[in-house]
Length: 234
Image (cartoon, rainbow, N blue to C red; front, top):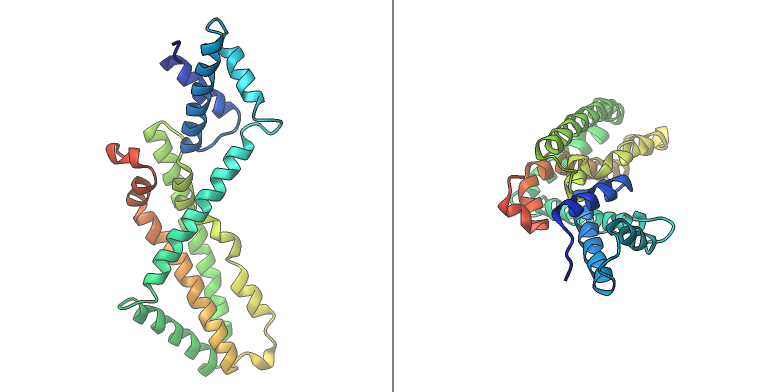
């Protein structure tokens, strides 16, 4: 039976790249599918030209091409990423890390309810925190480019999420928005202290996990998600 050659495999990678597939694992999935489909066509018609067979197979993906496949994989990996986040977050709700979580909450609660204008102090603290977030994210984006260059490949989808902090930056302004809508007479209220203290604790935990903890475990996470990487240098 006629087989797809290594040169034609490279052409399939080039083809997926030309059609805006930006993740290596999705490329691998599509290249494998296309190669098998082309070989199936050759089983019926061995004389069919490779490019003709490729175009015929691509048309089967419909008007949007590979977009639906990419989006499906993104949804699956986003879910996996959120599961990783929740797993790490749960560790901070159990001994011994729960003491760290409780201490952070009590400090925030005390600042809000006991210190005059304490909530304004916290709001002012959020601004440099945002700067730290984006500067760290910029550094990890540079690291992502270096990884791609050194490995001569596109990033894995989950790898991209880890290095981009799962795009949680879109929610970074939420604590400030909550602060803006708190009426002045409730600024030092006990329940506001509870709610806002818990909110800031949760956000601090999320940013620590996404910016530092998961990137530090990147190799371990990727080797678990992509077993073939256990035999490679990630």
